[in-house]
Every structure is written in structure tokens, then in C-alpha cells.
Image (cartoon, rainbow, N blue to C red; front, top):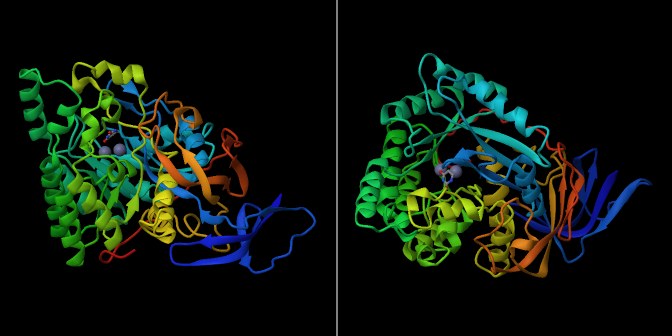
Length: 459
Ligand code: DUC
Ligand code: ZN
Ligand code: ZN
């Protein structure tokens, strides 16, 4: 059925205006004043509501084997939670197996995702191994529609500095974007061993073994390598002030260096690890101190943070409990996909940044940087009708029972939001309304991303 959303306040990354928005065959067909419905059009009254492009979560780990278990949201649960928080596309991380061609890695995950996803999805691939001619499959993968790749400087599957450098070099040649999880692995291991030997085992020591400089130092190294090649680099989940400074400096010098941060780093500080339930907040990188949080907000305002994403990687309470007496046994990650857009929009509603800025960070820039604009991330005729209707007057307190993920707890418990999404459309289909999930398993489609070349820091 065609849809006509009447009299809403349309918010794009660069404008705000009152208009009607028409949807035909899952695409936006027109935006303008006094659009008339045809006989089979459903009219939605959006007076006093905001009409926004659906968010795109650039960073999820659904059903990911990690930390001795599997993250608790599979593709159905994770995308269901996404829909209920106004996110209409998720970029999930495929993790390459050793010796595996990168297109095969994507196909392997796509076959699991396809029958489950309720909203659209795209992929990045985490590269573990470039032996043989695997590096050439970066180019094949770009042609297939997956043009972004993550390297880990941490974890046992992280790559060496030389491999990282090779991957960066290759990416430049074929329109791929390299993302990095930047933390110093050696220092983390040393600090961890010391703390355990001293009997310092609480969640606080997760933070203490990965403090600000552990991330900052790795950010600096990764940026230096990218700069030396003039290769684009995207730092995922940036959480520290010094790293933020380095990103800003590189961008001021004209390099294509981009940073993503996450709502948890904008809202919580490392103090959460002193709480009795501190283990539930354990993720990597960990939440940092107030100075880092302030620097991230300043980076957003200056335009040096390009995207906001969640690093959604939930684990159930019983799994988090494995690390009650040993922080190294806590699976790393938290749920967040349902909270990103509502939290960021609430911050805008409270006056911290503009609604346009939230749309830019959570939707439009994500689509641009990963090569799926204007199909995604924009309210323009011809784009997919991925639309959120937002009530700026609705008061909402986040509680576990209102969430739609498979996880049994939320780090956002008790957080009060000003305003909340009241409807989400995925390609014109209503998938969420007033607290209720209305979507269909398997309705989500693969989003093919285009190759991208960057000339400097603008998109
Ligand atoms: N960090 C997390 O906290 N979880 C998943 C992967 C990661 O890098
Ligand atoms: Zn990471
Ligand atoms: Zn991650």
C-alpha cells in the first residue's frame, strides 16, 4: 500500500521544514506541500512530529562467536531491536576464517542473515588472514558489494602491523575503506597479568588494563600508517580524548581520517566499572574518563566525529557473571542497537546538538561513507522509504521490559529520554509502532555498497 505522511517536520542532515512525504512501492516518491492521496493510499498524520530517515547502525555484532560464547542477539533479534529503536539498516561484522576468501566469508554470513533479518543489512568484514592471494579478494568483495574491512590491533585474531599496512595499501587501489579497532595489545596483556597476579580482579581492572593511553597510542600509530599512504582510515568506537586530538589534527592536515564513536562513550564514564554490576558495562574499548567524554562531544560539534554507531554485542547476565571474580572472563560487549537513535535524538531534544546533526551522524554520513547513499540515509525522492516518525513530547524511560533484544539486561536501564520514535517504516513497511514490533522475519534485504574513494576528510 502507498503511504502519505502528512504535515510532519522533515529533518534531513542539512534542513528542517514542514511538508508531506509520499511513499510508492517502498520508495520515497515525493516530498512537498499539500500532496494528495490516491484511492489506495494510507494517510499518516505526522503533525507536531518529526519525520527522519531511519538510522543506520554502522557497527553491530549479531550472533558473533566471541569470548567463549555467541552474542545473544541473532539476526532476527538484533534487527527487531533495531527496528524498534528507529534503525532501518545495520552493518554487521563478518569475521573471516583463516585462509578464507573474503567473498566466501560474506556469503557464509549472508546465508545465516537472509532468512532472519527484519530490516535491511550490509556487511563489513573483519580480516584475520591475508595468506596466499586473499588480499586480492578485497577487490572481489568490493565488486560483490562489501567495500569496508576491519582490522583488529587486539585479540588473538588481530593482525600484525605489517599485515595492517599491506591491507591499507591494497584498500586504496580498489575503493575499499579500512576500519580499525585500535588498542595496544601488548600493554593490555602486561597490565592484565600484573593485576591478576595482585588479585585485582573486579570489573574496574578491565578499565585499568585498557586506560586512555592504551587506545590513544594505537590510534596514533594507525593514523601515522594511513597518513604515510594517504589511505582512508575509519577508527571504530573511538573513546578517548588524545585519539580524538589525533583525528582532528590529521583531518586539519587534509587526510581522509574518519572517526566513529558510540552512545555509551557519550553517556557513561569509567565510573560504571566501580558499580556492583560493572561487568555488564564491560566492552572494549571500555568507557573512559570525563575528559574523554567531553572531548568526544566537542569532536561531534566540530565535525571531527563522522558517525555514531553502537558496537551492539550483547551477552546475557549468566555469561557476564562468568567474570564476577575475574574481569578477563567477562565477554566483552553491550546491547545498544535499540538505544542509539532515541538517545541521540533525546540529547538533541534537550538542546545539546541539533536534530540535523543527529541525522547526519546516525544516518546520512553512514550511508555516504560506506557507499549506500542515496538509496539509504536520506529523505529524497527515489531513496528507500526507511522512515522514522518521532514524537518530541513523548517521555520515555529505558527499562529492560520495553526492549526488543534477546538480552536480559540493559546498561541503559533507568535512563530518561525526552522524545521517542513512535513509528518505523522499512522500505515503506510499518515495522514498529508505539512500542510494538510489527515487522516480518526475512523481510530485510542485503544492501550492496559501492566502492568509495576519498580525497581528504570530507564526504
Ligand atoms: N568489542 C566489544 O566490546 N565487543 C565485540 C568486539 C569488540 O571489539
Ligand atoms: Zn572493535
Ligand atoms: Zn565492534
